[in-house]
Length: 516
Figure 1: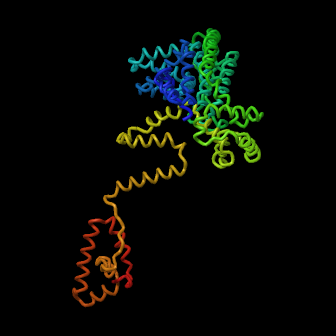
Figure 2: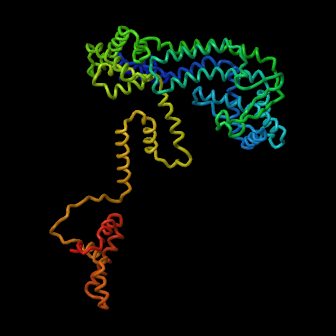
């Protein structure tokens, strides 16, 4: 074991009794313990963005709209009828609260901004309808927020910030991200946040909205046109003319940016500063883009070899041949893999086909590849299980669900041979459970006479014997025996049709050579 990754809960990362701490103290001083990077991004949002009251109001509105559409089928129908009358495409409001990562919030704000104008018109029509009295208070509260141009500008800047943070979260969610690439990804996100702070462009225009005094307008795609190629899409111009607080837009945007962007950038730096310390900077040599100075690369490799000396020694690592192997490795990559730019793809090929050529370098690379920076794969199992247990699959046994979840979560780590073994074992277990009894093949005994049912079935299918008995005009000895043995065959076939029927059909060839 070279690495252990978990979320930031105290039971995992506690300084004294945390699981990761106990693993490291249990004679594993080399162990790298990592708090999940995806959870660090979520904590950054909680500690910086969600302290802004205006952003909390935007999130509360998305939650309110989600439950309104879920619980009121009548208003949901009116909303879609309004969109059909305007000839525009609208989307379902997603769930953005609970155990949802930042990208779900970004999608929720995107849907809210897209549905803004049709939603405002639908709410006005619903309030005017006397049959919606039970929802009037909720609808009026939502309409008050939607009519505010300052609130609309807040939602737009919230979407711009979430787009930067969500891109970082999705990058860290990938299974094949290298540990040494975390710090550059965070630095890029910080630079984008700083650029957003200095950007004076209207954020409403970035979201496809135009605000002029009390009117907000947008060009929305027609129903079904988002499935077409961009050049074949058609749009409908829609507008809403009852916006308020238009003069507060610029001041609101500036105040929100100044109060949220600098703290967010600083919080990212503090949350991820552990990736600037050892052993992560010593892993840069794994990426061919960083191959410049062989002496520095060898120093980094020796640093890793010293850190993980115990597990490497158990694997047969020999540092004396490291320099020669590394030189051969670089030449091999240069001449045989010049077009492979991804470190993961490159080392996958080298580990598969050239391990014997430079085994010590491959051992160091395996140490680096074994370090996972997030537990996104484990977190996704909750979604897999929810999608698996639908209303039509409620009778699934717990053991079956457990097996399906294990297969879905670990399929990427299994080889083709391991998959075939699992399939064969599962198929054998299924077939043995379906059959009533197992048939064991028996060796034929030459001393015993052939089974009468096989001989007589063959004789009954023979044309000569049946013709001779019928020509005699009566029931002779052969006919009575045939009738008796046919009765035996039918009774035997009915008792075990699945085992006897193929044998009977195979014996009835109609040839005299099959007769005893």
